[in-house]
Image 1 (cartoon, rainbow, N blue to C red):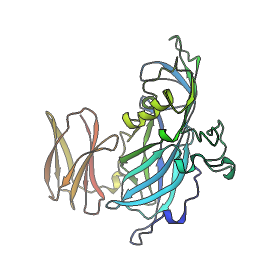
Image 2: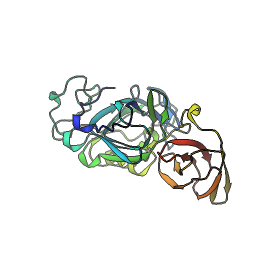
Image 3: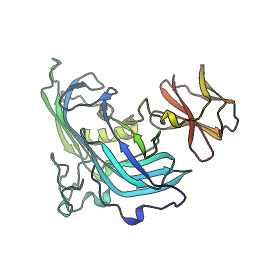
Image 4: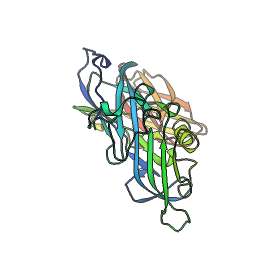
Length: 320
């Protein structure tokens, strides 16, 4: 995927670290399944819809790594599409990625720039369908084109267009992540759930909305209030890189007890949910130990044992 030229100052070199190719994936999902163009899927309200285009911008990326260091890639802008959702950040001086921050949309600093200044391979150049509304309104932060079922006959027949504009609708996401690490790269997968993004919208009757307010503002607010961006249920390290030993868990009422045995170099633990939110964390320096976390909400969670450098030693997925 193409990206805006990153200013030289955006990359901070940490000479003690080897450079690693870092790749982000934002697979589009509906109902937990991969979204395929022009196939019938259902909204959260159970209305059939088919999606022709689902495009949005990711920008202002920050990689939090190796004990809380912030690698600032804020001068990057990417466009994400159904068929093209891989963002190659390039070779970066990172070893362990703990979390990422990113904007959803085009930041105000470039949102009202002259589109003609960009080369055709730039995400901020002309797109088809158009992602630009003019200098005053700027870029379309989100574009969804498709059809909804207006009479519940199983055939999406009513035109649906949601093109959200406006600096005020720019959103920011911060989430812990679970990188997949290999000898040559670090891959981070973050699901983008279109059905959650369209929460509150009836595809069969919503019609056409190209605006900064109303439906357009409401769907952008879903980025803040709904699980639009989540971690995949199978996110994990390459198992071949994990240490020996075992980690188990048991659910006891409103708490989950974690037990680990024969795991070397343990320094601390983290418990996060599918959105990357940290639920619990603390020291865990024992070779064999136990910890109980209060978790009252049903869902999927990940428990990690880490060494003193923040590297994941062992992990387990929890289904409550």
